[in-house]
Length: 338
Ligand SMILES: *Cc1c(COP(=O)(O)O)cnc(C)c1O
Image (tube, rainbow, N blue to C red):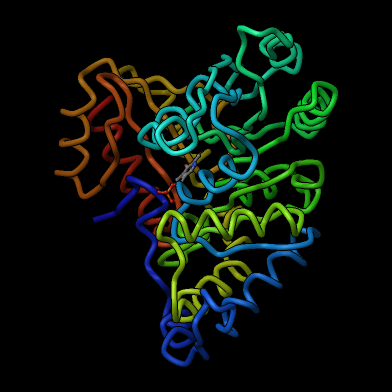
């Protein structure tokens, strides 16, 4: 089976497993796990920010960021199909007592003027707009990248209105590779960023939160509040260090393969692809037949994709699939959609 359902299916490499077995550990809640401390120091250096925090998942990463940047009754602006809005179990409201106001972007990218228009005027009736949350790459828009000028315009408009900026950088390394920019540039003007290590970078578990030391210290408290204070987490951090140092180099190949699949799908009568939105490792396909049936037909041909709507399927390239998976997916697509 070629598993193209998600980049979360990546398994730890042999080198990761060896590093995990050998990892020096301590009690990380007491700040005494040397491997976690190394990972956090390396991440802070790579992102050129003061501090980093290892958390168990991207959802917890996003949520501790949003908890650190808000008070109850406040408002977070996010793109209408953002992960924090659609896929985190309503946590912004259930955990922090805040509401999320959706603003529609173009291929997932918010327009700075639309954000400015959504910020509430100070008024006794209004919630205070506290945070702008940006997703880069944007998952449901197709793995789209926020162009650097757009990102700078968004951080500028947030500053001008006194909003903090949260970056859901679950796939920020994919964005950095697509833009040819270092991740440090992409997080330069944001307050807190959350980055997944367990997707295309290949770690078995974990995300990082990165930002200024005082903000990250608050995230550390909130991680504990959510039950995410881990003890001998060095066994996980050992794999995460390799994901951080070696994972990004593999992403360009994932992007190349995604592009080739998208182009092949785009030529078939039973499928359509918005090619401009295929910018990284995700390929969303609109199907003329019901997507769940197409998903089954792909599975019968040894290719796993994901039906994410009645007529919508997603294929994801990652380090555990290669050109053979691409070929199998193209062959299956021709049989199913041709
Ligand atoms: C995967 C993902 C997350 C975090 O997901 P977890 O499964 O909790 O690690 C957050 N934001 C986006 C955009 C994602 O794709």
